[in-house]
Image 1 (tube, each protein chain N blue to C red):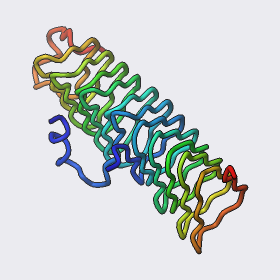
Image 2 (cartoon, chains in turn red, blue):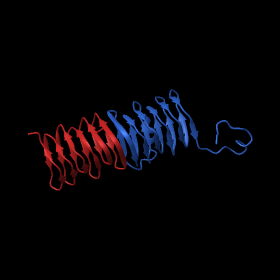
Image 3 (tube, rainbow over the protein chains, first blue to last red):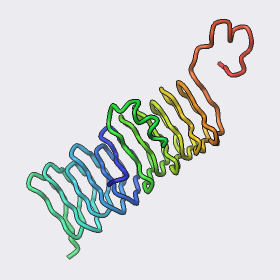
Image 4 (cartoon, each protein chain N blue to C red):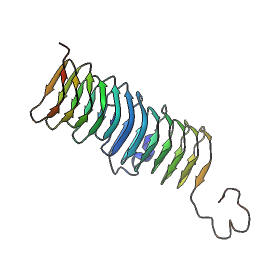
Length: 104
Length: 133
């Protein structure tokens, strides 16, 4: 139950800071920090550095992803940027360009 | 309680919500309805309805269709539809809308500007203090 939902028609230009889950269906340009999970749905565009808990991405993220938990790039995801997380999955069909840092 | 009033009027698109634990510094634009429960510093301009829920804090100029203010808002409201300033609202700014209702208990400092045509015979003869060009 996410309490913050950025709907498909909505664009945010600036900084988003959340103490709760964030679901992105629209566009965020700037910076996205969440204490909890971030879900970037298919069709969503995030042009921002993402700092959060678990990240699940089926949309497009341009920016670095830093997660305290896991990052799942689902089929259809398009990610350009570096990913730092404890666990990472990249599904078949996901497009990814960048470095992976799993803190080994 | 504040959501229910506009939730039914134009559910054309999807509803976006800014939760109570979320803070946005920047501009929010686009289509669809928007419910703000958190903090927003920056202008909000959407095609759909905007609800600033009780507990929300906004420092923004707000543009939308139907606008409900039940939280704290510093900034102007420009609505193409009705504006409701709820009982729990603390609003500092000018309000422009098709119709405006100000509920008992609301705290409001600003100007109310409502588009309407004066009935014939009114407005020309005497100087109406409410209308200024």
